[in-house]
Figure 1: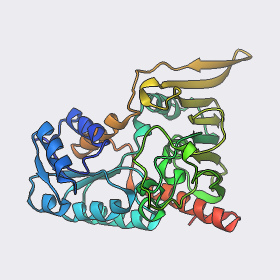
Figure 2 (figure 1 turned 90 degrees about the horizontal axis):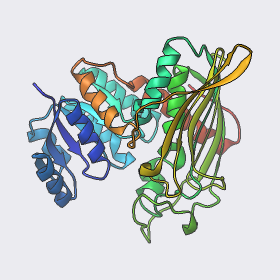
Figure 3 (figure 1 turned 120 degrees about the horizontal axis):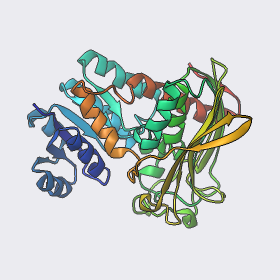
Figure 4 (figure 1 turned 180 degrees about the vertical axis):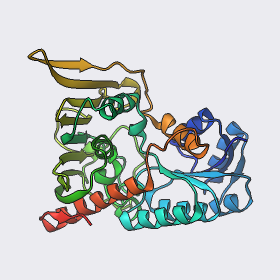
Length: 359
């Protein structure tokens, strides 16, 4: 019997979730959105039932799992509502506003005995799968250090909307562009962090000249109170270290989306090079290993299949296959909690100007 999925949020990201669920053998059975016209339009496309209230969908629709595609503030309450209704849950990134909320989600999932996963889609990119094959085979050794970057020169996703409202989003590019930080942690084996030292900047967060080519329309009387960039360093209890940079608006030569690491046997890089418009269709993905062979420094280019959607479809497919026991989950609630503890500590360090212990 195929898994029947209910979708909460009929926005642009739904197309990737739905495609992945269908690829995994699931059925899109119900769609809920406060904008009922959007829910009805999507429901017609997938032959699903439409709802204007997630609660009504959870109470009446014949579904086994739910995906949450909403502003960050609503991730925790909707995921918990779904879990308590006996549904498996898949949630867009970030997991929630902070680590305490993720802990609550994790606890309820364990109590309900249901699968809880998050859309850390860069783990599902072909390049990431290929790199993990080398890591798991022992070819890299211990990854001692990593540098993770998602830097946008002009990439503020609208002014005054939920992205720039801390109460709704939890923060700016630190929490929005957490993908490369998560991918670096994933490659390193998700070691336990000891402390974080960080600084945030807001130089251009009010400057309309730094608006990106995607996002949501400006809200004239809305709130813009988040950072425009963050620079940070993490030391792990294992002695490993990781530095990261995230920005929506920062004076950089181009957009940079990459994880570079140095291991005891080999180094490596996974990178996405965007075109001038910053859109996926013009991007070029690369994957490389750095080794010493026969006294020579050698760069190995790893050729993988093209994937314009940065693993979004494959990530959703993995959720369905995890429910069906066909694959191991690409991420766990414990890993999501660890990531959010680092993000919390990063904001705390930036406020205090001192290193912050991660508990």
